[in-house]
Length: 573
Image 1 (cartoon, rainbow, N blue to C red):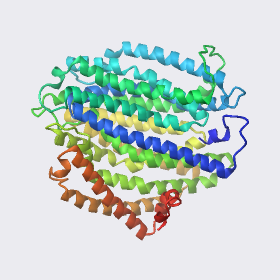
Image 2: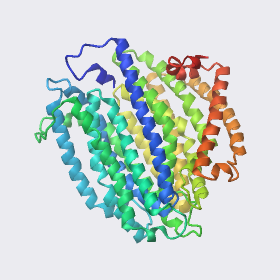
Image 3: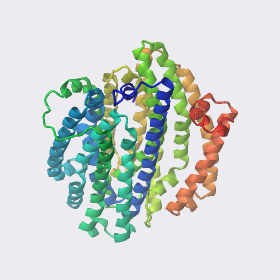
Image 4: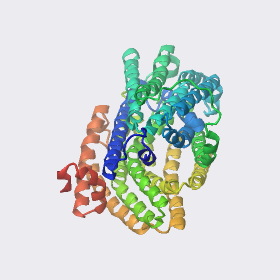
């Protein structure tokens, strides 16, 4: 974003003062963060409704999750890095031309539509082999159902490509809001289609053979609705694109676009994304073995978490990272980059230390809150069937295991920004390769030595542990290259903040116990009860936490609340 602010879309626009630039950036960050927040909340509603429709620790939930997640991972594997790493600098450069990048953008959009269209057709034709390769021990009936879902879901790859390239065009012309708010349209469409599914076919009851009773109409509505949401998300960007006034047209003259040169520069980043996404595909293959194993259990395997439950636990834990760590790291990234460009390497350590300590306030609290509220959070995404409590407990177990590495995930993310700011993409690639390889190796060992019903739990624990390892590796590399960043002070801050979060967690645990959170009581009785329990316990924990940090005069709290305190005077007290 710092590059965009330096190169306005219209050459005639007068240069902004630093104060105006800061205000403009703050508005952009606020707009992006609000879009992310609304989209995440709607995503939670969509996920909760989907569990009502087809369950969470169920055969159909895992089959649909497999087919619906494959397009996202394949898109990131094939083109995600190209759109985000290679094209952004080119679009920014093109936006400074006399035609404001109209010719280049026309070529780029045309190329994207052609390439992603051909790739999508090829992958759809390979739906059956893809499902077979990416699953473990699935029965013929499960393979057939997964293939049918994949036929409907794989076209999402094309619309992901369109969304990515049009979004980056808008970002290059300082239109940040539409790209972050378009997923809201996607979630609204999917909420409507899943709601319609429940009205027409009823909620999952926990009885009968779900796979045998499934109909073609259910497939079209569920999987077709998922793809329709992604299509709407992409097409929604064309209206703000028209307002940019680029006069785009089909242009097949792709020679001389400069993609090969930029691609070479971004090779390490693209390699890192490939390694990470290939590892995700392999690990999801291992976890998919839970679906057929569940069929052999007398209770339908409601206590056995699978791919849907694992992905849901990750969806929950990534929320504070996405809202707080990502926003803070994005803001500091501009300062890192400026310090490197101005040869002020001595400023890197203080900036990194401040970022790590400030992010500790929300991230450590979120980690403790997830541990305390793992049960109600799992129940929230477990549907309304007769086995919903057991399914919620299965998700809660994965949430506990995944949460253990959450603070380290954010620490690693901050440290990696330093390497990127110095335009070093090789080091992050090497870290990613080591960690991804270890993750796959450990997951393979787990498949060999553990019962199939425990594979999802093992992978969740591996994810949490490798987040710790990523942070440790990044720490040593940062210290070796840039010197100590005040790691002792950072560690002390985390311990001090962690103690306050633990105390607030103990208070929250008592409140949750009173709400029946540990004996299948009120907190487990329904989705609504889970929501009430989460709000009550979370509010009590947050209040106790902030009071404790205030009493100990935490400078990290002041840094974290600073932007809000400037707008809400009562927070200064």
